[in-house]
Image 1 (cartoon, rainbow, N blue to C red):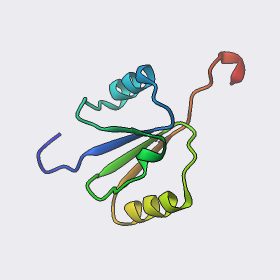
Image 2: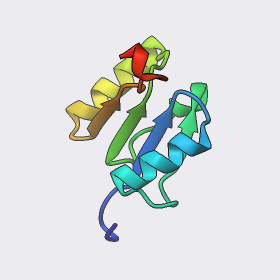
Image 3: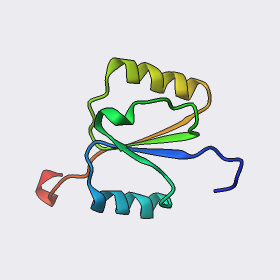
Image 4: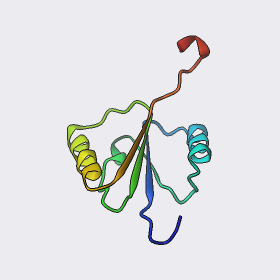
Length: 90
C-alpha cells in the first residue's frame, strides 16, 4: 500500500483466524489491515478507504446508515457471503 492510500478495514462476523488468513491471502491484505468483529466493527470509518464485510453479520441500523454515508462519500464496500460448511449445503 502506498503512503497516500487510505487503509482497509476487514469486518468479520466471527473471530476465525483460519478464515482471516484465507481472506488476507485471497484479497492480498497484509497484517497491517485491522480486523474488527461483532459490535467493535462499527466505529468511525472516516479514516478508511474500503471496508470488507465478511460473512453473515447482524448490523445495527446506525451502522447501516454509517456504511451508506461511507459509500456515498467515495468509500469502497465489499461484502463476502459465508461459504457453505459442506458440499451438501450448496
